[in-house]
Length: 563
Image (cartoon, rainbow, N blue to C red; front, side, top):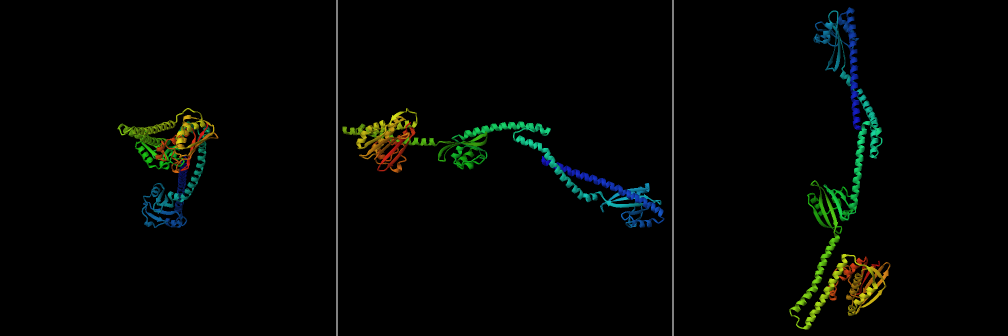
Protein backbone atom coordinates (compact mmCIF):
# COMPACT_ATOMS: atom_id res chain seq x y z
CA UNK A 1 0.00 0.00 0.00
CA UNK A 2 2.80 2.41 0.91
CA UNK A 3 4.57 1.66 -2.35
CA UNK A 4 1.41 2.37 -4.34
CA UNK A 5 0.90 5.68 -2.57
CA UNK A 6 4.53 6.69 -3.19
CA UNK A 7 4.30 5.68 -6.84
CA UNK A 8 0.97 7.41 -7.41
CA UNK A 9 2.14 10.68 -5.86
CA UNK A 10 5.43 10.65 -7.76
CA UNK A 11 3.78 9.94 -11.11
CA UNK A 12 1.17 12.62 -10.42
CA UNK A 13 3.90 15.11 -9.48
CA UNK A 14 5.90 14.38 -12.63
CA UNK A 15 2.83 14.66 -14.86
CA UNK A 16 1.83 17.94 -13.20
CA UNK A 17 5.39 19.29 -13.54
CA UNK A 18 5.63 18.38 -17.24
CA UNK A 19 2.18 19.73 -18.10
CA UNK A 20 2.84 22.93 -16.16
CA UNK A 21 6.17 23.41 -17.91
CA UNK A 22 4.58 22.83 -21.34
CA UNK A 23 1.73 25.22 -20.64
CA UNK A 24 4.08 27.91 -19.34
CA UNK A 25 6.39 27.39 -22.32
CA UNK A 26 3.47 27.64 -24.71
CA UNK A 27 2.21 30.81 -23.04
CA UNK A 28 5.69 32.38 -23.07
CA UNK A 29 6.21 31.37 -26.69
CA UNK A 30 2.85 32.87 -27.68
CA UNK A 31 3.70 36.10 -25.96
CA UNK A 32 7.09 36.11 -27.66
CA UNK A 33 5.46 35.67 -31.08
CA UNK A 34 3.13 38.58 -30.48
CA UNK A 35 6.01 40.81 -29.42
CA UNK A 36 8.13 39.73 -32.44
CA UNK A 37 5.30 40.42 -34.88
CA UNK A 38 4.54 43.75 -33.22
CA UNK A 39 8.22 44.72 -33.48
CA UNK A 40 8.35 43.84 -37.22
CA UNK A 41 5.07 45.67 -37.88
CA UNK A 42 6.33 48.79 -36.14
CA UNK A 43 9.68 48.68 -37.95
CA UNK A 44 7.94 48.04 -41.29
CA UNK A 45 5.75 51.14 -40.90
CA UNK A 46 8.70 53.28 -39.89
CA UNK A 47 10.87 52.08 -42.82
CA UNK A 48 8.01 52.49 -45.32
CA UNK A 49 7.29 56.08 -44.17
CA UNK A 50 11.01 56.90 -44.21
CA UNK A 51 11.44 55.55 -47.74
CA UNK A 52 8.57 57.63 -49.07
CA UNK A 53 9.88 60.87 -47.54
CA UNK A 54 13.67 60.40 -47.84
CA UNK A 55 13.95 61.46 -51.49
CA UNK A 56 16.59 58.79 -52.00
CA UNK A 57 16.22 55.76 -54.15
CA UNK A 58 14.67 52.79 -52.41
CA UNK A 59 17.69 50.57 -52.82
CA UNK A 60 20.09 53.24 -51.58
CA UNK A 61 17.97 53.94 -48.56
CA UNK A 62 17.67 50.23 -47.73
CA UNK A 63 21.44 49.72 -48.03
CA UNK A 64 21.97 52.58 -45.66
CA UNK A 65 19.36 51.22 -43.24
CA UNK A 66 20.46 47.56 -43.11
CA UNK A 67 23.48 48.48 -40.99
CA UNK A 68 21.14 49.74 -38.24
CA UNK A 69 18.95 46.61 -38.38
CA UNK A 70 21.50 43.80 -38.21
CA UNK A 71 19.02 41.07 -37.19
CA UNK A 72 16.25 42.21 -39.53
CA UNK A 73 16.20 41.18 -43.19
CA UNK A 74 14.93 43.75 -45.67
CA UNK A 75 13.37 42.65 -48.95
CA UNK A 76 11.83 44.76 -51.74
CA UNK A 77 9.42 43.02 -54.08
CA UNK A 78 7.72 44.23 -57.30
CA UNK A 79 3.95 43.86 -57.65
CA UNK A 80 4.53 40.85 -59.92
CA UNK A 81 6.55 39.07 -57.22
CA UNK A 82 10.01 39.81 -58.56
CA UNK A 83 12.57 40.43 -55.81
CA UNK A 84 14.50 43.59 -56.63
CA UNK A 85 16.39 43.95 -53.33
CA UNK A 86 17.39 41.79 -50.36
CA UNK A 87 19.70 42.80 -47.54
CA UNK A 88 21.03 39.27 -46.91
CA UNK A 89 21.42 37.68 -50.39
CA UNK A 90 21.63 38.66 -54.07
CA UNK A 91 18.13 39.51 -55.23
CA UNK A 92 18.73 38.11 -58.70
CA UNK A 93 19.19 34.61 -57.29
CA UNK A 94 15.89 34.61 -55.44
CA UNK A 95 12.71 33.03 -56.78
CA UNK A 96 9.48 34.88 -57.42
CA UNK A 97 7.58 35.75 -54.21
CA UNK A 98 4.16 36.38 -55.70
CA UNK A 99 2.72 33.31 -53.96
CA UNK A 100 4.09 34.12 -50.54
CA UNK A 101 1.31 34.63 -48.03
CA UNK A 102 2.55 37.87 -46.54
CA UNK A 103 3.20 39.35 -50.06
CA UNK A 104 -0.25 38.35 -51.32
CA UNK A 105 -1.93 39.91 -48.27
CA UNK A 106 0.11 43.13 -48.61
CA UNK A 107 -0.85 43.54 -52.31
CA UNK A 108 -4.49 42.94 -51.48
CA UNK A 109 -4.90 44.55 -48.08
CA UNK A 110 -1.88 46.87 -47.75
CA UNK A 111 -0.15 44.66 -45.14
CA UNK A 112 0.42 40.99 -44.39
CA UNK A 113 2.26 38.66 -42.00
CA UNK A 114 3.39 35.05 -41.82
CA UNK A 115 5.51 32.64 -39.76
CA UNK A 116 7.37 29.80 -41.44
CA UNK A 117 9.58 27.08 -39.96
CA UNK A 118 12.83 26.22 -41.63
CA UNK A 119 13.64 22.55 -41.37
CA UNK A 120 17.15 23.20 -42.59
CA UNK A 121 18.01 25.84 -40.01
CA UNK A 122 15.65 24.63 -37.28
CA UNK A 123 14.30 28.18 -36.78
CA UNK A 124 10.97 29.99 -37.09
CA UNK A 125 11.05 33.07 -39.43
CA UNK A 126 8.63 35.96 -38.80
CA UNK A 127 7.56 37.97 -41.91
CA UNK A 128 5.74 41.31 -42.13
CA UNK A 129 5.04 43.07 -45.45
CA UNK A 130 3.54 46.51 -46.30
CA UNK A 131 2.48 48.00 -49.61
CA UNK A 132 4.43 51.10 -50.68
CA UNK A 133 2.97 54.06 -52.59
CA UNK A 134 4.60 52.96 -55.83
CA UNK A 135 2.96 49.59 -55.70
CA UNK A 136 6.05 47.66 -54.51
CA UNK A 137 6.03 45.57 -51.35
CA UNK A 138 8.49 46.06 -48.48
CA UNK A 139 9.00 42.96 -46.35
CA UNK A 140 10.87 42.73 -43.05
CA UNK A 141 11.74 39.31 -41.58
CA UNK A 142 13.53 38.06 -38.50
CA UNK A 143 14.66 34.54 -37.48
CA UNK A 144 13.90 33.22 -34.04
CA UNK A 145 14.17 29.92 -32.13
CA UNK A 146 11.22 27.60 -32.60
CA UNK A 147 9.17 26.44 -29.69
CA UNK A 148 10.95 23.07 -29.86
CA UNK A 149 14.32 24.73 -29.64
CA UNK A 150 13.08 26.81 -26.75
CA UNK A 151 11.94 23.62 -25.06
CA UNK A 152 15.34 22.03 -25.61
CA UNK A 153 17.00 25.04 -24.12
CA UNK A 154 14.71 24.96 -21.13
CA UNK A 155 14.96 21.17 -20.71
CA UNK A 156 17.64 21.27 -17.94
CA UNK A 157 15.51 23.75 -16.03
CA UNK A 158 12.43 21.58 -16.51
CA UNK A 159 14.42 18.50 -15.39
CA UNK A 160 15.57 20.30 -12.26
CA UNK A 161 12.02 21.33 -11.51
CA UNK A 162 10.82 17.71 -11.95
CA UNK A 163 13.53 16.45 -9.58
CA UNK A 164 12.57 19.03 -6.97
CA UNK A 165 8.89 18.16 -7.37
CA UNK A 166 9.71 14.42 -7.14
CA UNK A 167 11.62 14.98 -3.91
CA UNK A 168 8.75 17.03 -2.52
CA UNK A 169 6.31 14.30 -3.57
CA UNK A 170 8.34 11.62 -1.77
CA UNK A 171 8.54 13.75 1.35
CA UNK A 172 4.86 14.60 1.25
CA UNK A 173 3.99 10.97 0.45
CA UNK A 174 6.00 9.78 3.44
CA UNK A 175 4.16 12.18 5.72
CA UNK A 176 0.80 11.27 4.25
CA UNK A 177 1.44 7.51 4.42
CA UNK A 178 2.49 7.73 8.06
CA UNK A 179 -0.51 9.81 8.89
CA UNK A 180 -2.90 7.62 6.90
CA UNK A 181 -1.59 4.30 8.14
CA UNK A 182 -0.87 5.19 11.77
CA UNK A 183 -4.42 4.44 12.98
CA UNK A 184 -4.45 1.20 10.99
CA UNK A 185 -1.09 0.09 12.44
CA UNK A 186 -2.23 0.88 15.96
CA UNK A 187 -5.45 -1.03 15.44
CA UNK A 188 -3.53 -3.95 13.92
CA UNK A 189 -1.25 -4.11 16.98
CA UNK A 190 -4.28 -4.11 19.26
CA UNK A 191 -5.85 -6.94 17.26
CA UNK A 192 -2.61 -8.97 17.52
CA UNK A 193 -2.76 -8.51 21.30
CA UNK A 194 -6.41 -9.54 21.34
CA UNK A 195 -7.57 -6.00 22.06
CA UNK A 196 -10.27 -4.50 19.88
CA UNK A 197 -10.34 -0.99 21.33
CA UNK A 198 -9.58 2.08 19.27
CA UNK A 199 -11.83 1.30 16.30
CA UNK A 200 -13.73 4.51 16.81
CA UNK A 201 -10.51 6.49 16.31
CA UNK A 202 -9.83 5.03 12.87
CA UNK A 203 -11.60 5.65 9.58
CA UNK A 204 -15.33 5.12 9.52
CA UNK A 205 -15.04 3.20 6.24
CA UNK A 206 -12.83 0.58 7.89
CA UNK A 207 -14.93 -0.05 10.99
CA UNK A 208 -17.11 -2.79 9.36
CA UNK A 209 -13.95 -4.41 8.05
CA UNK A 210 -12.32 -4.49 11.49
CA UNK A 211 -15.55 -5.69 13.11
CA UNK A 212 -15.48 -8.64 10.71
CA UNK A 213 -11.83 -9.28 11.57
CA UNK A 214 -12.72 -9.19 15.26
CA UNK A 215 -15.42 -11.81 14.80
CA UNK A 216 -13.17 -14.02 12.69
CA UNK A 217 -10.25 -13.73 15.12
CA UNK A 218 -12.43 -14.67 18.05
CA UNK A 219 -13.74 -17.68 16.13
CA UNK A 220 -10.20 -18.64 15.08
CA UNK A 221 -9.02 -18.34 18.70
CA UNK A 222 -11.81 -20.67 19.80
CA UNK A 223 -10.76 -23.16 17.14
CA UNK A 224 -7.08 -22.83 18.13
CA UNK A 225 -7.92 -23.37 21.81
CA UNK A 226 -9.99 -26.42 20.93
CA UNK A 227 -7.26 -27.84 18.70
CA UNK A 228 -4.63 -27.08 21.33
CA UNK A 229 -6.68 -28.90 23.94
CA UNK A 230 -7.18 -31.86 21.64
CA UNK A 231 -3.49 -31.92 20.75
CA UNK A 232 -2.49 -31.77 24.42
CA UNK A 233 -4.88 -34.63 25.15
CA UNK A 234 -3.47 -36.69 22.30
CA UNK A 235 0.11 -35.89 23.41
CA UNK A 236 -0.70 -36.96 26.97
CA UNK A 237 -2.29 -40.19 25.75
CA UNK A 238 0.50 -41.06 23.29
CA UNK A 239 3.17 -39.91 25.74
CA UNK A 240 1.92 -42.37 28.35
CA UNK A 241 1.58 -45.23 25.91
CA UNK A 242 3.93 -48.14 26.45
CA UNK A 243 3.49 -48.88 22.77
CA UNK A 244 5.52 -46.89 20.24
CA UNK A 245 3.57 -44.71 17.81
CA UNK A 246 4.87 -42.88 14.73
CA UNK A 247 2.65 -40.96 12.28
CA UNK A 248 4.07 -39.99 8.86
CA UNK A 249 2.91 -37.89 5.95
CA UNK A 250 3.28 -38.69 2.24
CA UNK A 251 6.84 -37.40 2.16
CA UNK A 252 7.94 -39.74 5.00
CA UNK A 253 8.11 -36.72 7.30
CA UNK A 254 7.23 -37.29 10.95
CA UNK A 255 3.97 -35.69 12.09
CA UNK A 256 3.99 -37.23 15.56
CA UNK A 257 6.18 -39.61 17.55
CA UNK A 258 6.00 -40.61 21.21
CA UNK A 259 8.84 -41.34 23.62
CA UNK A 260 8.23 -45.09 23.57
CA UNK A 261 8.82 -45.21 19.81
CA UNK A 262 12.03 -43.18 20.18
CA UNK A 263 13.24 -45.62 22.85
CA UNK A 264 12.31 -48.73 20.83
CA UNK A 265 14.06 -47.41 17.72
CA UNK A 266 17.18 -46.53 19.71
CA UNK A 267 17.17 -42.86 18.66
CA UNK A 268 18.39 -39.92 20.68
CA UNK A 269 15.81 -37.96 22.65
CA UNK A 270 14.93 -35.03 20.41
CA UNK A 271 12.05 -33.27 18.67
CA UNK A 272 11.58 -35.22 15.43
CA UNK A 273 8.42 -33.44 14.28
CA UNK A 274 8.84 -32.37 10.65
CA UNK A 275 11.99 -34.46 10.19
CA UNK A 276 12.40 -37.42 7.89
CA UNK A 277 11.76 -40.97 9.10
CA UNK A 278 15.43 -41.70 8.36
CA UNK A 279 16.41 -39.27 11.12
CA UNK A 280 14.53 -41.52 13.56
CA UNK A 281 15.34 -44.95 12.17
CA UNK A 282 17.37 -46.40 9.32
CA UNK A 283 15.97 -49.91 9.72
CA UNK A 284 15.57 -51.09 6.12
CA UNK A 285 12.68 -53.44 6.93
CA UNK A 286 10.68 -50.61 8.52
CA UNK A 287 11.43 -48.15 5.69
CA UNK A 288 10.48 -50.72 3.06
CA UNK A 289 7.27 -51.60 4.92
CA UNK A 290 6.35 -47.89 5.11
CA UNK A 291 6.79 -47.58 1.34
CA UNK A 292 4.53 -50.62 0.93
CA UNK A 293 1.94 -48.96 3.19
CA UNK A 294 1.65 -46.12 0.67
CA UNK A 295 0.80 -48.77 -1.93
CA UNK A 296 -2.06 -49.96 0.29
CA UNK A 297 -0.30 -53.01 1.81
CA UNK A 298 -0.27 -53.54 5.57
CA UNK A 299 2.79 -55.12 7.19
CA UNK A 300 3.27 -57.06 10.42
CA UNK A 301 6.93 -57.50 11.44
CA UNK A 302 8.69 -59.13 14.38
CA UNK A 303 12.00 -57.34 14.99
CA UNK A 304 14.66 -57.14 17.64
CA UNK A 305 14.80 -53.43 18.54
CA UNK A 306 17.05 -52.12 21.32
CA UNK A 307 17.46 -55.66 22.68
CA UNK A 308 13.68 -56.04 22.90
CA UNK A 309 11.48 -58.34 20.86
CA UNK A 310 8.91 -56.12 19.15
CA UNK A 311 5.95 -56.59 16.87
CA UNK A 312 5.70 -53.72 14.41
CA UNK A 313 2.43 -52.95 12.61
CA UNK A 314 2.72 -50.59 9.63
CA UNK A 315 -0.31 -49.51 7.63
CA UNK A 316 -1.50 -46.59 5.54
CA UNK A 317 -3.83 -43.84 6.69
CA UNK A 318 -6.47 -43.20 4.02
CA UNK A 319 -8.91 -40.41 3.33
CA UNK A 320 -11.60 -41.02 0.74
CA UNK A 321 -9.70 -44.09 -0.51
CA UNK A 322 -6.50 -42.05 -0.97
CA UNK A 323 -3.45 -42.84 1.19
CA UNK A 324 -2.55 -39.61 2.98
CA UNK A 325 0.09 -40.98 5.35
CA UNK A 326 1.32 -43.98 7.31
CA UNK A 327 1.26 -45.16 10.91
CA UNK A 328 3.81 -47.30 12.74
CA UNK A 329 2.71 -49.10 15.92
CA UNK A 330 5.40 -50.87 17.96
CA UNK A 331 4.44 -53.42 20.64
CA UNK A 332 6.91 -54.87 23.14
CA UNK A 333 6.47 -58.65 23.06
CA UNK A 334 9.68 -59.49 24.91
CA UNK A 335 7.88 -61.16 27.79
CA UNK A 336 5.60 -63.07 25.45
CA UNK A 337 8.60 -64.16 23.39
CA UNK A 338 10.47 -65.27 26.49
CA UNK A 339 7.38 -67.05 27.78
CA UNK A 340 6.97 -68.80 24.45
CA UNK A 341 10.63 -69.80 24.49
CA UNK A 342 10.28 -71.10 28.05
CA UNK A 343 7.12 -72.95 27.10
CA UNK A 344 8.85 -74.64 24.17
CA UNK A 345 11.86 -75.53 26.32
CA UNK A 346 9.61 -76.67 29.14
CA UNK A 347 7.56 -78.87 26.80
CA UNK A 348 10.69 -80.36 25.30
CA UNK A 349 12.25 -80.99 28.72
CA UNK A 350 9.07 -82.45 30.22
CA UNK A 351 8.68 -84.73 27.22
CA UNK A 352 12.26 -85.86 27.59
CA UNK A 353 12.13 -86.29 31.39
CA UNK A 354 8.83 -88.20 31.27
CA UNK A 355 9.90 -90.36 28.37
CA UNK A 356 12.95 -91.77 30.18
CA UNK A 357 11.18 -93.40 33.18
CA UNK A 358 8.19 -94.41 31.05
CA UNK A 359 10.50 -96.14 28.61
CA UNK A 360 12.12 -98.03 31.48
CA UNK A 361 8.75 -99.00 32.96
CA UNK A 362 7.45 -100.14 29.58
CA UNK A 363 10.59 -102.14 28.92
CA UNK A 364 10.57 -104.03 32.22
CA UNK A 365 6.80 -104.62 31.96
CA UNK A 366 7.26 -106.14 28.48
CA UNK A 367 10.06 -108.33 29.75
CA UNK A 368 7.77 -109.69 32.48
CA UNK A 369 4.87 -110.07 30.02
CA UNK A 370 6.99 -111.91 27.48
CA UNK A 371 8.21 -114.35 30.09
CA UNK A 372 11.74 -113.11 30.14
CA UNK A 373 11.63 -113.17 33.97
CA UNK A 374 12.55 -116.84 34.44
CA UNK A 375 12.16 -117.01 38.17
CA UNK A 376 10.76 -115.16 41.12
CA UNK A 377 13.99 -113.28 41.77
CA UNK A 378 13.95 -111.81 38.25
CA UNK A 379 10.34 -110.74 38.68
CA UNK A 380 11.19 -109.04 41.96
CA UNK A 381 14.18 -107.29 40.36
CA UNK A 382 12.11 -106.07 37.41
CA UNK A 383 9.30 -104.99 39.74
CA UNK A 384 11.80 -103.09 41.89
CA UNK A 385 13.08 -101.25 38.82
CA UNK A 386 9.51 -100.46 37.76
CA UNK A 387 8.75 -99.19 41.26
CA UNK A 388 11.89 -97.02 41.25
CA UNK A 389 11.09 -95.46 37.85
CA UNK A 390 7.45 -94.97 38.92
CA UNK A 391 8.59 -93.13 42.03
CA UNK A 392 10.88 -90.99 39.94
CA UNK A 393 8.01 -90.28 37.57
CA UNK A 394 5.67 -89.34 40.44
CA UNK A 395 8.33 -87.04 41.93
CA UNK A 396 8.83 -85.36 38.58
CA UNK A 397 5.09 -84.89 38.07
CA UNK A 398 4.70 -83.48 41.59
CA UNK A 399 7.52 -80.99 40.97
CA UNK A 400 5.99 -79.94 37.65
CA UNK A 401 2.58 -79.45 39.27
CA UNK A 402 4.08 -77.42 42.13
CA UNK A 403 6.08 -75.26 39.74
CA UNK A 404 3.04 -74.68 37.52
CA UNK A 405 0.92 -73.62 40.50
CA UNK A 406 3.59 -71.18 41.66
CA UNK A 407 4.07 -69.73 38.14
CA UNK A 408 0.36 -69.12 37.74
CA UNK A 409 0.76 -66.41 40.38
CA UNK A 410 -2.66 -67.02 41.88
CA UNK A 411 -3.31 -65.55 45.28
CA UNK A 412 -3.04 -68.36 47.82
CA UNK A 413 -3.87 -68.38 51.47
CA UNK A 414 -1.33 -66.63 53.65
CA UNK A 415 -0.76 -67.36 57.30
CA UNK A 416 1.80 -66.97 60.02
CA UNK A 417 4.44 -69.62 59.35
CA UNK A 418 6.90 -70.71 62.06
CA UNK A 419 10.10 -71.28 60.13
CA UNK A 420 11.82 -73.22 62.92
CA UNK A 421 8.96 -75.73 63.02
CA UNK A 422 9.06 -76.09 59.24
CA UNK A 423 12.81 -76.63 59.33
CA UNK A 424 12.46 -79.33 62.04
CA UNK A 425 9.77 -81.10 59.99
CA UNK A 426 11.92 -81.07 56.86
CA UNK A 427 14.96 -82.49 58.65
CA UNK A 428 12.83 -85.30 60.07
CA UNK A 429 11.51 -86.14 56.57
CA UNK A 430 15.10 -86.32 55.27
CA UNK A 431 16.38 -88.40 58.15
CA UNK A 432 16.50 -91.65 56.18
CA UNK A 433 18.42 -90.40 53.07
CA UNK A 434 20.72 -88.47 55.42
CA UNK A 435 21.55 -91.66 57.35
CA UNK A 436 22.22 -93.50 54.11
CA UNK A 437 24.90 -90.94 53.15
CA UNK A 438 25.94 -90.44 56.78
CA UNK A 439 25.15 -86.69 56.47
CA UNK A 440 24.62 -84.80 59.70
CA UNK A 441 22.19 -81.87 60.14
CA UNK A 442 22.97 -78.85 62.33
CA UNK A 443 20.17 -76.33 62.90
CA UNK A 444 20.68 -72.82 64.23
CA UNK A 445 17.18 -71.43 63.95
CA UNK A 446 15.59 -68.51 65.71
CA UNK A 447 11.91 -68.75 66.50
CA UNK A 448 10.73 -66.56 63.59
CA UNK A 449 7.25 -66.18 62.23
CA UNK A 450 6.64 -64.71 58.77
CA UNK A 451 3.48 -64.09 56.72
CA UNK A 452 3.42 -66.51 53.81
CA UNK A 453 2.10 -69.75 52.38
CA UNK A 454 3.10 -72.70 54.56
CA UNK A 455 3.14 -75.27 51.75
CA UNK A 456 5.36 -73.12 49.52
CA UNK A 457 7.77 -72.28 52.32
CA UNK A 458 8.02 -75.97 53.29
CA UNK A 459 8.72 -76.81 49.64
CA UNK A 460 11.45 -74.12 49.57
CA UNK A 461 13.27 -75.40 52.69
CA UNK A 462 12.76 -79.04 51.66
CA UNK A 463 14.34 -78.53 48.23
CA UNK A 464 17.30 -76.67 49.68
CA UNK A 465 17.91 -79.35 52.31
CA UNK A 466 17.17 -82.23 49.92
CA UNK A 467 19.79 -80.93 47.45
CA UNK A 468 22.23 -80.43 50.31
CA UNK A 469 21.86 -84.11 51.17
CA UNK A 470 21.75 -85.51 47.62
CA UNK A 471 24.84 -83.68 46.37
CA UNK A 472 26.84 -83.99 49.61
CA UNK A 473 29.84 -86.15 50.21
CA UNK A 474 29.63 -89.39 52.13
CA UNK A 475 29.88 -88.41 55.80
CA UNK A 476 29.35 -84.71 55.07
CA UNK A 477 27.27 -82.15 56.96
CA UNK A 478 24.46 -79.65 56.37
CA UNK A 479 24.19 -76.40 58.33
CA UNK A 480 20.76 -74.67 58.44
CA UNK A 481 20.57 -71.11 59.81
CA UNK A 482 17.38 -69.06 60.20
CA UNK A 483 17.97 -65.59 61.65
CA UNK A 484 16.19 -62.24 61.71
CA UNK A 485 17.88 -59.36 59.96
CA UNK A 486 15.96 -56.12 60.20
CA UNK A 487 12.51 -56.64 58.71
CA UNK A 488 13.58 -59.82 56.91
CA UNK A 489 14.11 -63.47 57.71
CA UNK A 490 17.33 -64.99 56.34
CA UNK A 491 17.37 -68.73 55.60
CA UNK A 492 20.79 -70.16 54.83
CA UNK A 493 21.49 -73.80 53.92
CA UNK A 494 25.18 -74.72 53.58
CA UNK A 495 26.62 -78.16 52.74
CA UNK A 496 30.04 -79.73 52.38
CA UNK A 497 29.18 -81.39 49.08
CA UNK A 498 30.62 -81.52 45.59
CA UNK A 499 29.99 -77.83 44.89
CA UNK A 500 29.01 -76.16 41.62
CA UNK A 501 31.57 -74.99 39.04
CA UNK A 502 31.47 -71.22 38.51
CA UNK A 503 30.63 -71.73 34.84
CA UNK A 504 27.25 -73.27 35.72
CA UNK A 505 26.26 -71.19 38.75
CA UNK A 506 24.16 -68.69 36.72
CA UNK A 507 21.99 -71.46 35.23
CA UNK A 508 21.23 -73.73 38.19
CA UNK A 509 17.90 -71.96 38.83
CA UNK A 510 16.63 -72.78 35.30
CA UNK A 511 14.06 -75.56 34.83
CA UNK A 512 15.51 -79.02 34.29
CA UNK A 513 19.07 -77.69 34.34
CA UNK A 514 21.48 -80.15 35.96
CA UNK A 515 25.21 -79.67 36.24
CA UNK A 516 25.97 -83.41 36.14
CA UNK A 517 23.06 -85.20 34.49
CA UNK A 518 24.36 -88.67 35.16
CA UNK A 519 24.78 -87.94 38.88
CA UNK A 520 21.36 -86.25 39.04
CA UNK A 521 19.69 -89.32 37.59
CA UNK A 522 21.55 -91.51 40.03
CA UNK A 523 20.31 -89.40 42.94
CA UNK A 524 16.78 -89.06 41.54
CA UNK A 525 17.04 -85.35 40.76
CA UNK A 526 14.54 -83.76 38.38
CA UNK A 527 16.31 -80.44 37.77
CA UNK A 528 13.30 -78.50 39.10
CA UNK A 529 14.22 -78.12 42.77
CA UNK A 530 16.12 -74.82 42.58
CA UNK A 531 13.67 -73.51 39.95
CA UNK A 532 10.87 -74.07 42.50
CA UNK A 533 13.00 -72.32 45.16
CA UNK A 534 13.46 -69.31 42.88
CA UNK A 535 9.74 -69.02 42.11
CA UNK A 536 8.70 -69.37 45.77
CA UNK A 537 11.19 -66.64 46.74
CA UNK A 538 9.88 -64.33 43.99
CA UNK A 539 6.28 -65.04 45.03
CA UNK A 540 7.11 -63.92 48.58
CA UNK A 541 8.95 -60.76 47.28
CA UNK A 542 12.35 -61.96 48.43
CA UNK A 543 15.67 -62.78 46.78
CA UNK A 544 18.09 -65.71 46.69
CA UNK A 545 21.90 -65.82 46.63
CA UNK A 546 24.20 -68.71 45.68
CA UNK A 547 27.76 -69.23 46.89
CA UNK A 548 29.62 -72.35 45.83
CA UNK A 549 33.11 -73.67 45.30
CA UNK A 550 33.76 -76.85 43.39
CA UNK A 551 34.84 -79.70 45.70
CA UNK A 552 34.19 -77.65 48.86
CA UNK A 553 30.46 -77.13 49.14
CA UNK A 554 27.50 -74.88 48.41
CA UNK A 555 25.63 -72.27 50.44
CA UNK A 556 22.27 -70.88 49.34
CA UNK A 557 20.88 -67.86 51.19
CA UNK A 558 17.22 -66.83 50.93
CA UNK A 559 16.01 -63.48 52.26
CA UNK A 560 12.26 -63.03 52.78
CA UNK A 561 10.28 -60.11 54.19
CA UNK A 562 8.69 -60.97 57.53
CA UNK A 563 5.45 -59.16 56.64
